Figure 1 (cartoon, one colour):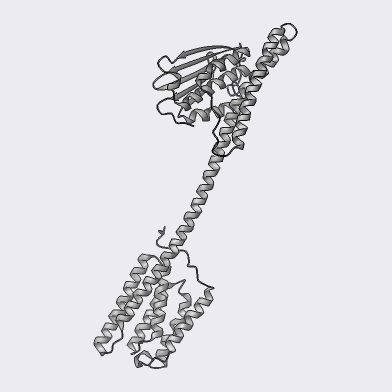
Figure 2 (cartoon, one colour):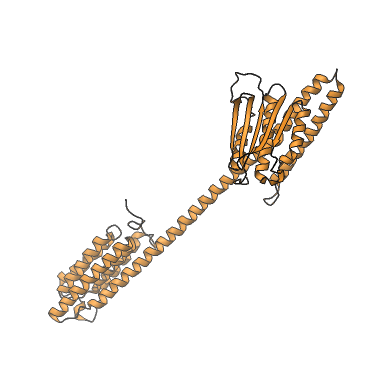
Length: 395
């Protein structure tokens, strides 16, 4: 598997590729045929002229095989030197090929190629100078090759930089979209949980009291009036909570979320289900822990656990009774709600399930690093939450 420094995407040409190639070939041919005043820079004969013009068509393949094209151009330059000609055309094709190598290959490959090419050119030129006494201008050509390699490396670095910027922008956009989707999903789940908590309990109270009022309307009108009063109170409460949620949804992002109930309102919750006909026994063993000493998130989740347990007891329980246990054990708050169930052989998955109530409750408990258990127990159906106090995290 090749590393990112070994292969690069093809460069983006300034114009159509064939136009760039035609311009480069014309430049090389013009440099080879230019009437320069220095005799050793003019082709010595037809053979040398053909040798100098040979690399021009090879430049058309420099994008696909840059190193091979540079090798051909270097051999042509060395051959022309041995024939006594320092052709500007041969130098031009070698510079173009060197630029392509540095631009289209990795930096490691480009550095090695520049070093080898400069060494060959300078070594051959120095040997010809010592053997014949003619100056092949090998230092100038060597410096020009190094400069062509540097320019090609700069072009490759710029291309990598632009590619990195585009990729970074694309990843940032994808991350932003993913974060937006995640927030939308979390907000939908939060709204679903709040809507369930706000509506399910009060609707259960309203439904049960409506049944009580209907049964006691003729024989016990006072009981019916009491049930209707409870229905009125519960209806106002649920309408107020729904109205508060809708106002938050319609408001901007800076709007404050409605206040969530906690264990300080536990007595109101217990009284509301007692009025609906559910006998609730509350055992609070938090003698050393005040309600306001609990983390806010744990306080809210504990209230929601009890609310869900009592709602399920109203809808699915039997015997019209429930038991609540609150205690602190090993830096954790234990909340247990139990109630008898109607059929001993009923499916545990169905008992105490109120649609997505337990699903949302597990999400709430998980948000404070807690755990939730629900299922059959010797006393009927048991809903138990273990809520860490020290490691609680606000939801």
